Length: 201
Length: 218
View 1 (cartoon, rainbow over the protein chains, first blue to last red):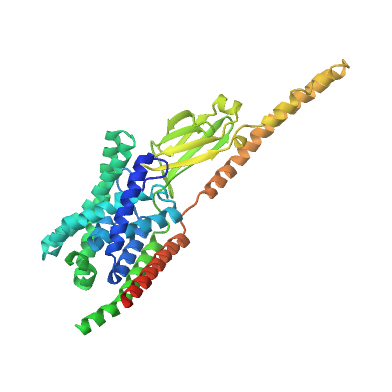
View 2: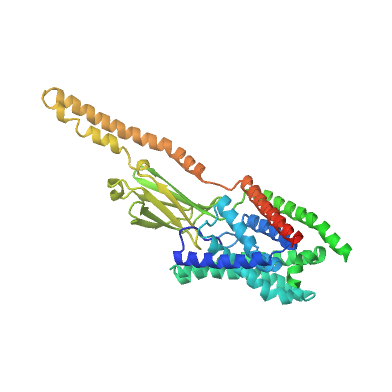
């Protein structure tokens, strides 16, 4: 999911960086005192999740958890993901500093979209909320994969090859993330409903 | 109302501790199986350069594209595909030896993963310096007729010896070279993971500090 350094064209890098700055500014503006620990916990979870392999499928992928972050954080997911990606680039050499903007957009963008797309359903009682939580996890990865493909294609890589790989590689991760998001959502709803205040706000 | 807000304030640190603990445990369990970065390394043996590419920690890059680039001019010398063990080897191009190019070996795997390895000319152009010193050696040996064949024979012997030595050394040093290249690869350590989580905690504290100040003095 992390695009490496030296792959994308300068135009794509600059566009990604600009979008990331705007998103982070919006996120920081919405950040209040109560939300800080939520943001920190999920940032740490995202930071570690990339170390967990999903060894199924043609290209071994790792967890991203951006659907879950969108569900719990909304716009706040952007600064949370930016910080985690920065530390991953620094400490793990995943991605890189020049691609930080693009990687933030490809992972945090879907989180924000998921938040607004599923917020209404997540408030409903029973089955509907559960299905929405699962769909939230799946959609997060799906959209991220699509954004990675768009970034690569706009830099000039062959369309079919990229699209095929991105779709195939992410199917197992999509399902696993959907399940994780579903269980985390159900658990929090029962045990710590205050963690979910983002979707009720 | 008061009671509710008190409860929330109490649950704050408890929640943080619980979550961090579970993240740390998760991190501890996953340290051996680390994820996604492409590394490529290369070394020369005989007239061939061997490359090996993997996703960190140990998955070979199958059918990844290797590009060999002259670092100075940026000219692409050749491309190739890795086999199912992530390996790809090629004969050293004569042009590269002649111009002593530093080779930039770039691995481009699927979905924007990329890694590169710089192979310095000194590490694959064999015995460039000794070859020059042996060439002019026979010239001063010409005046005395009987001595000439002896020196020539010695020269040839020396060359053969050197070639044999080079061969033996290469065979012996091959595994060491491979080990050294393995060692230069940065792998994620538990220190990195805990350090990163520490940074996030620190930033959380910073943000909380500034926001709490703003709250107190509106």
